[in-house]
Amino acid sequence: MVSAISGSSSAAQYSSSNSSSNAAEEAALEKQIQDLEDQAKAIKDQVQAAQVQQDIATAQARLDALKAADKVAKANQDQAAKADQTQSASSAAALRQAEFDGDRTTRQANEFWM
Image 1 (cartoon, rainbow, N blue to C red):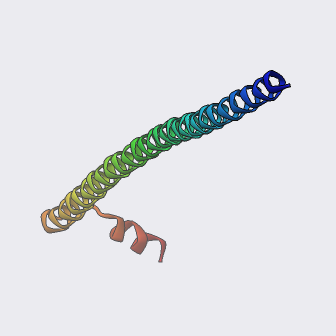
Image 2: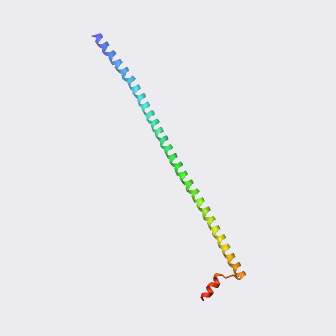
Image 3: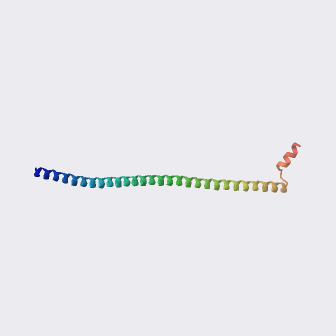
């Protein structure tokens, strides 16, 4: 009977020792799982951040292209306006010179109709 009590006591000690060892291993595994999940989230956040940075770069490139196109269009518009002014000034100068020289002008043609 003593040996039965002794064997029962050994089994209880082994079981207690085994369960505390399992609890420590479970806690370690739970911590490892949490750490891995955190790493996965950080990697996911990094990927999302990289995608957002790429979207920002794409939008910035489009904005720069639009600004460059606006600048070219404005330069062309300014050049066309300058050309119109030069042509208008040249036409007005030619008309004044023609009137001074006594050549027929549009005003004389209009007087004919009056």
